[in-house]
Amino acid sequence: LQGCLLFYTHSTFLSRYSENTLFGMGNPLLDISAVVDKDFLDKFGLKLNDQILAEEKHKVLFEEIVKRNKVEYHAGGSTQNSVKIAQWMIQKPHKVATFFGCIGTDHFGEILKKKAEEAHVDAHYYEQNEEPTGTCAACITGDNRSLVANLAAANCYKKEKHLDLDSNWELVKKAKVYYIAGFFLTVSPESILKVAKHASDNNKIFCMNLSAPFISQFFKEPLMKVMPYVDILFGNETEAATFAKELGFETDDIAEIAKKTQNLPKENNKRQRVVVFTQGKDDTVATVGEKVTMFPVLNIDQNNIVDTNGAGDAFVGGFLYALVQEQDLEECIRAGHYAANVIIRRVGCTFPEKPDFH
Image 1 (spheres, rainbow, N blue to C red):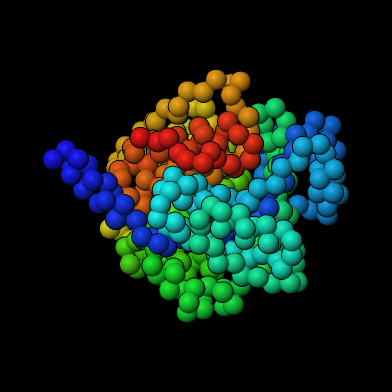
Image 2 (cartoon, rainbow, N blue to C red):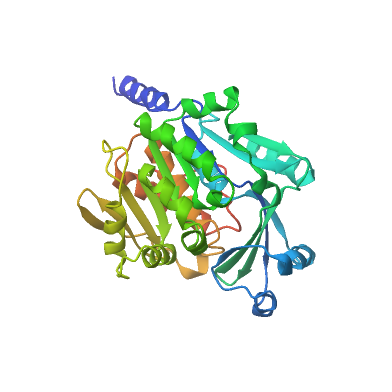
C-alpha cells in the first residue's frame, strides 16, 4: 500500500507540470567570465558588484577579457538564467520553461541555441543579422563581480516580428507563470506590457525584477507603467534602496520599502502583490499578507563561495520552480535560497547535473 501511495503522490506531483507552463522573455547574452584585478576594474571605471550597459569605452574590454587566462563561456542573460534554473530544478518534463529573446545569426548565437537545448528550455529566439549576439563580461575579483553587458542583438527584439506572431503568442497563452527581468525594459517595454496585461486579465501570475539600480533611475517611466500588473516583484537591497529613492519613499529601511512597494497601485485585485528583496548573506525580506517577514539564507563557509554572479537569478529560478507547483511563499523562498546556495559555489550561472532539494 505504501508503495502504491508513493507512486500515486509522485505521479500527481509530475502532473502539476506541463510544457510551457513558465514563460520568460529577456535579453539572451553569452556570458564571458574571467578573474580580473582591481587595476582592470579601474581602467574601465567599473565598480564592485555593479551591472552596467557597455558604452563605447568598454568595447576594448570585451577584446581584452577574452585574452585573459581561464575565460569561461556560458549561456546567460538574467531572465534566461532564471528560467534555466527553474527547469533544472523541475528536471522532467523537459520544456516546462519557455524563453523569448533576440540573437544574431552567428557563432555565439549557435552556442546560445545549443546551451538552451542542453538546459531543456523551449527557447524561441527572434534571429536577425543586423547585430551580433549579445555578450556580458563578468569581471570577477574575489567574491565580487562587475557585469558589463553589450546587448547588441538582444536590443533588437521586435514585438510585431516575434511576440505578435500567432504561433508565438499561443506559447504565451499556455503559460501560468510569467517572469521578465527589469533589464528588458530597455529593449521592448511594449512586449512586456502585452504579456503583463494578458497575465492580469486572466488572473495568472506576472513576476518582475528591479534588476539593477540604473533601471529605476533611467527607465522609471516604463517600469512604473508595468508596475500595476506586477504580482511578484524581486530585487536586491541596493536596487530596493534606489527604487525607494526614485519614488520618494523617504526611508532606507528595507522592510518599509517592501511594504510601500506592495501598496503601489495594482490592476488585478484578486492577487495581493508580493515583494521579495534579497540581501546577499543577510535575511531575505518578503511581504507576507499585511506583514513583512525575514527569511534567513542558508549558511555557507566564505571559502566555498566561488562566484556570486548569478545568485540573484538563481534565487528567482528556484522561487519560480516552487511557484509553478503552486507552493506557498515560504516554500518558494526556501527553493530560491537553495538554488542560490548551489550557484555561488560554482563559476558563472552553472549547476550540477541534478538538484538535491527536498
